[in-house]
Image (cartoon, helix red, strand yellow):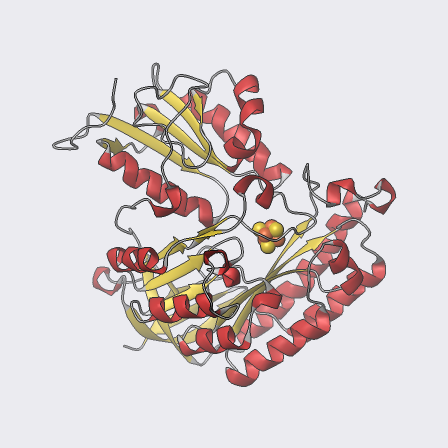
Length: 436
Ligand code: SF4
């Protein structure tokens, strides 16, 4: 049976798609939804009404894998008799064989780019399936005034803690014209560019350009086609002066530096570059150029060999860097990584790692709250999203705090830029009134 249909009239079949993990997975799910829609499927609002239930999984750390398995089991129980269950995403890619063996309730485990709903052989477990290019697949229109756009897949780095290159493969950048066509089709006010190692976009495409030129060209070209362009996940040493300048010139001076740590001996063991002094110098340059720049980062606590001295260095850095936003995570040992092969006596006790994480989070919460409070009384341009929620350039969607509009947004204000006055701070969020 070939499941393609013309798509005319009411859909005969429905799908329910559950997405776990990071923004990159959301983009893959949007593209899968577009593919399903083209194949004649409509979306079901609950798993019990669907003919096809799909779980787009995450395998980043142990907790994410557990959540993925729990979701698979819960959706399997909730589906109606005869409905099929497919599992895709990172967990399917990384542990496909184990999933097939351990979860007989799953009809199909499909890695990236496997066309699991259009093939005549679809849903025969262990079937050889034709593939499509998920990175280049068309997606349905955006349902919000902003959208993630994935510009590359995979990563050429080998950070000690990270298993992503082992299952996502080396970096594969999209062509500039394909990205720009997607941006134009999406027709949103804000485009959020994402990749595993965004600042390295285009390096794998060869050419004679200087290192780092392709991402600058991309930022400039996307910026010419949308109001706001925001970049997530910038590897710090790949953030060139040219890229800093290009980001500031877009009008969204937002810098998401994936630091992971700042102590040099620990960074070396993480097989990463950087260090507190270099990063602080970078931050000072950004703030000289754009005093209102917003900065975000994320950090791992409890990486093998992390000492009290390393931890104190990180705390001192947080005080000095005065970041707007930061996320803190405890180390999770991933099979096949460099860190997993480090001597056992370097391991940090999980309770100590958790205590260090909490200490950093407490310090950063106070810094974030102080920075948010300092904005009260000023005005800002915000993108009105939905309900009462809006964001300025300082807040990335789904990660940072929000700006809540007093009295809520009128339907005709949604998706528009508004001028607001910030009237109060509530932890990471701000309360605002509309001026115009
Ligand atoms: S830059 Fe490092 S942490 Fe990020 S995906 Fe690549 S290897 Fe993993």
